[in-house]
Length: 148
Image (cartoon, rainbow, N blue to C red; front, side, top):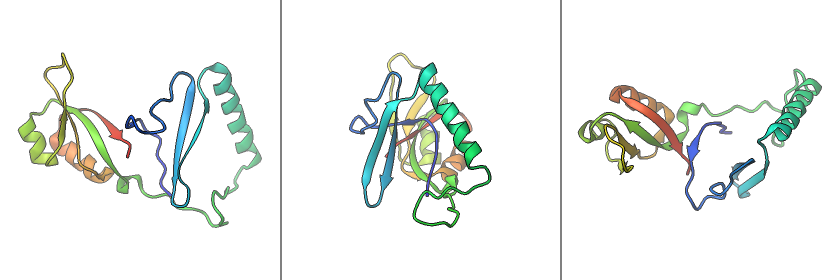
């Protein structure tokens, strides 16, 4: 099982792309179901307070208990996040030659009025490989994962 909570860009075609305002969405991809989206209010003081209280009550009711999330009573092991593969949008002060030396072929992104930095999207790679390359590049200003 793979699980991560992190900011990510989503494609316009994604079911998550049009969720806004006080609504949250969770996309679950299953091998038998395909993509399933859960959508509803999740921001603002009342929905947030309700969610926090529900989580605290649930934790208290199941203290020291392994809650099964599939048809097995065995404890599930999560995939090490460093092995999860993504594409990454990166902002850096490095030049294109240096970027390509470290990351290989990338897709460049431009923003009107922005100077002194370069934006690009990497090929698909593991989180561990990205971390190694980002350290080698040494001038990463920001990184956001690109959802597939």
